[in-house]
Length: 99
Image (cartoon, rainbow, N blue to C red; front, side, top):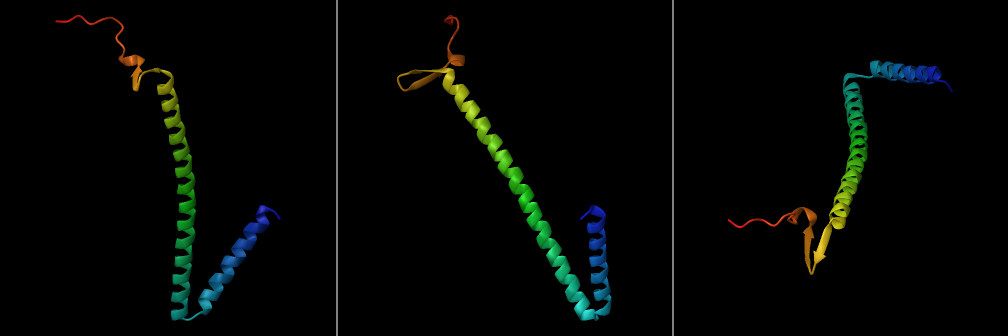
């Protein structure tokens, strides 16, 4: 089934729905319109939820990976003296002169 055939089936279905809508009375047409709008809202909401869930999952994985990299970087640059961790950045290269 090609794209052109699927498109023609879609257009035909829309035409049938519009024809049925014209044949209905005012109250039923309003009810059909309201149901169509609610269905569209649900479909849109579900699509957005899936889209944001995937993005949130991807960003959470990136954040988890970045945190793990920072933890590993700190672990490897730190010396432990007893229960005190002393990073190399805090070590003095030259003794400070007292004033």
